[in-house]
Image (tube, rainbow, N blue to C red):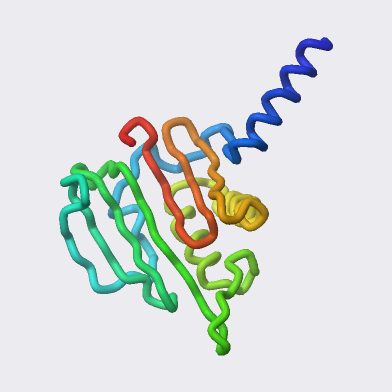
Length: 164
């Protein structure tokens, strides 16, 4: 019993140090399909271009964010390699608004994207945003099998780990 407790403590410390948490998969789909991921999102100005490493990249502006762009990268857009976006909002004085607040557009957008991928989007978004605010400027992630969801509160990613 002493060994198990020590091992549990060691695993918890590794997770705290590296900011990564592996949790049981509760994905709503096994694929990162562009059509599913973009469903009900406020996106505009769609472009299809080539990524820096030659893969297909779909790119949009996020309608509603002061500064925001959204992209899906992968040659197979029905099961993409990476979903990434940036989202920032500013107050009248030019200060960045916190995405941790319940009324934050960027928090709501994060939850909207996650709702197209996982079963518990609000809980995951809240957990990651709170941890990322504390870890700033480091990012934090949660791992669901081969999928990683990551943020530093400015940039957000859903990655297929086996293709990175």
